[in-house]
Image (cartoon, rainbow, N blue to C red):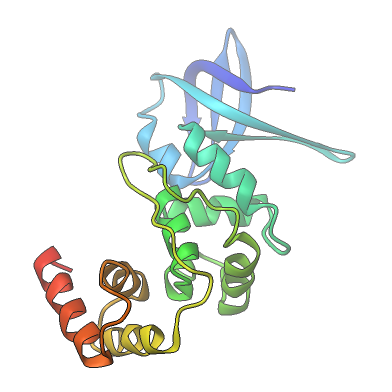
Length: 200
């Protein structure tokens, strides 16, 4: 099994590249995020590889970072998320964004990826909510830990902030910093204050 490739970029397309390793060209599918970071043809590059062997095909999927590779492997465990869909998600969102969206149950953020509808986004949140990293940050960010379901009053406050134009992820992140015994009005007021100070 191929786990890593280092060579010279031969050609690039919107969804894949050919990397020349000692005269052998490997066709590797990758996210637009990885493809955009590799540089132009002639540039030397290293990719972490997932090798998928099936009866009718032999496919290579490449990742610039191990964080992206780990997220890819997690995404394809969800029913209905194939390898192409996982790459679409990783093209639209960073691994950290994906983990945060799942943790905050932010369906809208996940549907930013091409081909991901509300039903699939809901299934992803359900199946992965207990599998995402809880504390350790990726690429300089921190994955926050959220309860799988919010208390009714907190959910009301989240809805109020979303109705005011904030994303669910932003609202949950802000409210998670506040005392849980605040009144609904105080939750909304202090949540707005945090969001305005953070520039969101």
